[in-house]
Length: 615
Image (cartoon, rainbow, N blue to C red; front, side):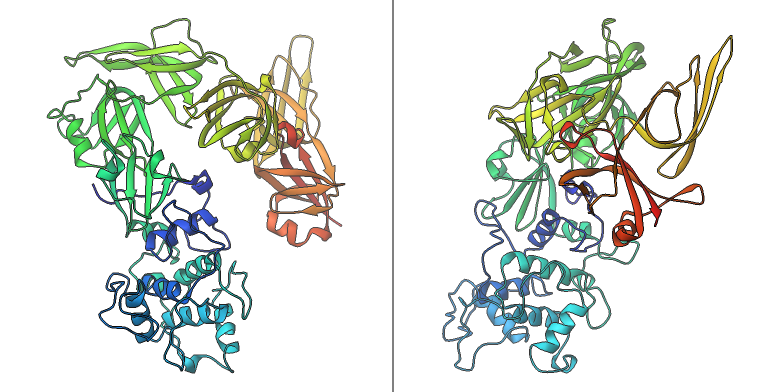
């Protein structure tokens, strides 16, 4: 059950938008921390805290250099002899210090001491990493440390490192330095991470997933306790992509670990086992709750085969690994995932009974708070599209119930709503009519929720909010575009309209039947129902903002944030062309800028479209 691993989650969220290549300037600290921890260069304390603001000692730096080298698995902490008079062979870092000095990455002092408790300066840290890359004194021009620091900067080892010459290196700065080291070219032209055996992606850049997967064990399923799988020791723990503790890991979590880090995932799907491919005798994938799941382990394949304990037609729970593959399967009577969400469609599906005979059943499609869409048999004719439901599971049937309304209100600040705290892996769904979209806590930061904005709120035993269903709060379920053409016909017998608009640079045309919208040219919010344009609403504007940042704009001390799908256009020669946000920011003073937003930030609004015109 080793190394079934293809995607990093985090942040999902917090890890969902991280690029594949190692680049500290573009990568979140959470990802950088996980990579450096997975390799073992830096690990957290007993509570998983990386203590990034503490200074680094010379003993700690020696260990970091060894962990970032080809000697990482060959050096014992304790030496068989004392490498320096102030480093006895019993010192916790004696072996690391001995190796680092023998390889020429570090040096002792003329008085025969190493001073293991002394702090490390920027130039010392930079020089050690340059030597790992294969550079020697002949490669540094000028006197120490100017030549070393010049090369350090030219190789981009300084990205996000804030220490200056003579300054003491903190663990945070060391984290960035070693992360940059992995993607830097060694003296022989190879990417340094490649010399350590880690892979490159299709663009020839270092793939951080390969860094983690090469050092990772798993998946394992927690059936008793985490300690039965791995000794937590001083390992850093993440659960569902967020910093956590060993106490938070639960039965049936799927666990991966390295020498320094534990990742636990509570990803499960429960539903009817509908079919197997290529056959139930030898399944490689299965359909459960309307979705196809690849079987990532031989154990899961056995359980779901004709030789196992679970048969087509049973209600089962699949435990999913971090790559979405099923790593284990068990009866829903043992463990069932909780489901709450919105019915987005009704239909009919084919199912099988215990003896293999097929039958048809009414079904509902549910957009759940975990972001998944599932299909369940439902014989209740009272359940309709647009209903909010909860799903329960017995041994042989699925129970669908109208979700009881619960609410909460207050300003959202980080992971709090009013006086309530949200769990770090809180599941949030915004809904409109029969449409739904999963969003994340950061999307709501700074907004104020009224009781009418919330349809459902669930909490765990600690009182933390675990699930939240909103009612058309964010506005993210609409389409936003620039209307470039509006043709409306109004006759004695009929009304109709045809509207052409741009969405992210793509031209689209929709029509109305039986009505006209009175739409005018320009940016607007578009409501689309059954393939037809049902309404158009003009957007508010911010003209000539004072500043433009990566996150949004300011105007007269008010802030407005960009939506994730915000489209930036250059208007010239009576036409629109896409413009990058970077170009807009870099040449801010060259444009007359108008930003179009749907509502105030405190109400969940965002800038949806930006139009720039050359001055």
